[in-house]
Image 1 (cartoon, one colour):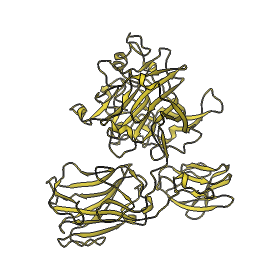
Image 2 (image 1 turned 30 degrees about the horizontal axis):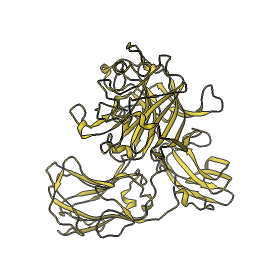
Image 3 (image 1 turned 90 degrees about the vertical axis):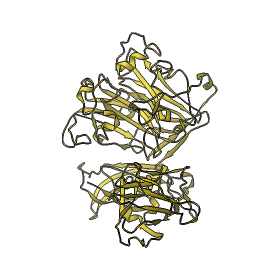
Image 4 (image 1 turned 180 degrees about the vertical axis):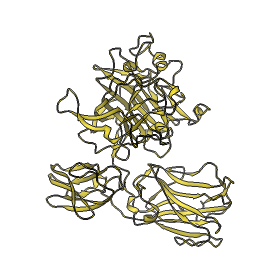
Length: 599
């Protein structure tokens, strides 16, 4: 979903795809449950960066039988006209609309393949913006992470009229939002940076000369009926298509080639599905500025349905990863030359070292060990911040009882913080006050060693399974100094080879996974793997041992299963925040684990 962006493309011929092949199904989602999805809530920053007018609520997302298709369930996202307590934008201003959004971030990611989905959108009139799209899993901010939009509707009249001489259009500039649908790929390019596009977003649908962008038109309407959308994706190219009444139509005249500029598309992506209201794609107005467009005329409530998602091999390519990144264990090196480690980061390869907002410049202090070190001088900005960011999220959950170690040479009069940041944007820090010894750090003008327990630095909200910045240094008092860092690593990680690595699970092994997220609010997922078919029950207990709800009680097949708990008791009422326990029992296995509900 797009703000203003820039065209930067070299296409290749569609003819080159004729020899490529669709292979076996490697993953599919039939929406019998929401185990593979997180439900987004809130309004984001400036309406999710697009001036959208809705507040996303978990009450607007459900699994429902598809109308007219008895026995066939699908994802239902509902847009409503409503306001009330908590339905506000990022500044606390009241909003008049709610809707739904789900994401598979940390749940399911895909790299390459033929991805197909069957979607029904409502009559969107003016202001509806339904979309099925994907974002790169990398920790880079948008657009550097990359975006793939398999379908979105609600475009402005200007955009519809520009392209309506092709792909079903009649050239009369009379299409409605219900009669046109588009697709897009967005990535970062230096050449795309300008005053109107400071983020450097290059978009293949930005085509002011009407040369190659080919949104699909059908004057019998594309709303209130199912259509099939596809992306054909391998390491060399991407093609978007729609299937309507059995006929496949391409969204662009030629295939988009993946090269060194658009290398984002060689990384994994996760799914997003939502029904937005208003915003920059549409002719309706933007958040906070009623004069920027027309009033909303979308008839509400309105329902968007997604029947299924299917991923097949395409041209021999296709990868699926279920769950967060694989657990790391042992010692995890962030920046070290001589400390042995089991796995780690390498700046310029799978990690970046960033200085925030030009607050530091290169220093001259030699390394503590080896040939490489980090040395900085303050620039007089009144604060400084810097960190080591992994390009992809790193799972260091197994280091919960371990330590974050580092060497530092910094004047004793400088108070600073050391922290970590997860892929959801949560931050947590510990203090190193001026003139004090803390976590073993002695500052006497020489190099000192600090060792921070992970239990101290993780705080309440950090998701250790999805880390973005594994090390951050921050100073907020405006101290001027030169300092250096070296030998930075996590240690004490428990080694767990079987979790999320299905091929290494013993046929006789029953696994209860840690619930995710934890702590959580308002909901969490509980997963287990059964080595054989048997009866399984899962119960939730409060801290006093009272049974809150029997969450699951079924005969299951061998394999992995997930259950969704919305923090409610057996009467359907929401429970209070605090510590809860989930207990699993089968014929030959039982286990209890702890989780925390935040309110």
